[in-house]
Image (cartoon, rainbow, N blue to C red; front, side, top):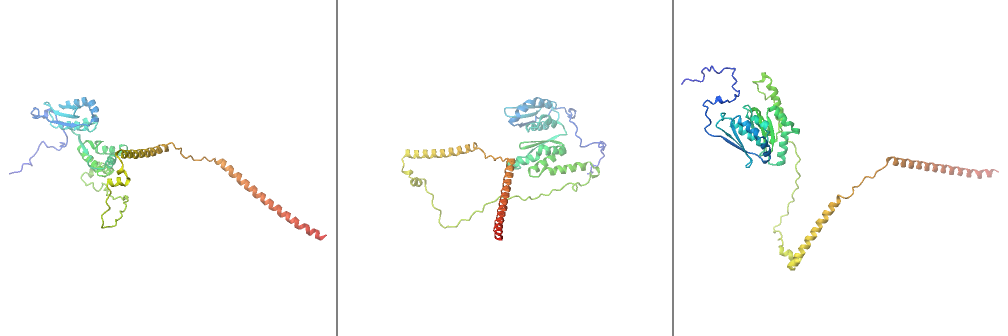
Length: 358
């Protein structure tokens, strides 16, 4: 049989954009008949979203009425439902309506969530609760995705052209399909302990490379950074060495029974009333000890703290100067006394020599 795929296609001209999304209009439904069956989707929402959903439900109804979709809010069961009607002409709009109620349940504000009804916007709700078992570690990694003052999240939103909301155990994202794919990769790897900054750098480089038409058909891997995983040395917890027990062939001594302990203490021979009295007395003694300990703890708060003694530096300096002056004065007086005593001694030695000459 002759191949038919190489036939001329006069309608397929180069100016046609095959990737363009055309709006689905009522005239596109050639038969004009309604759908054979009714499609229904239901989503549960948390209790804290009830008040907000009640306030915006009239706007949700108006937005879905344009596409002939019926919506219901059940506050008893805590559920939102969307259904097709006999007037619904677009077969894909019910899926968009399902995504809308899903986003509203995950705390996405209505003005942002209603954009999902547009043809060029899709959504993705990424579950992050099962990646990490440790709660503290999970909170740290989730916060790493948000970043300081939400800077990391803003950078991801700008680079992927998506709206991202981190709420509880899920991350809700809205935007083009290509951006959603990147967001899912970043979020999942962040919860696997890969920092989002690596992907942000990569996306920034890709954005710059996309501006150059000469690199459109080339491999970009040589321009992208390659980050190797490093094993950072961590301090190991000190484990105390267990002492080896000396082997003995004999079994350990038998633990005494309750009756044996009562016989040793003499409680066994007491009457029923005496035992109760003894237990009550022991209980009161323990209570007194505990109350005394608590009283001491309370009194610690009322103990005056030790105050630092204030030293007047000027007074101390003056005192020091006076002491030095006094010491100098004493030294001077001592020197004068010595000098005088030496002079007196010389005079005494001169007198007898004069007498002998006469």
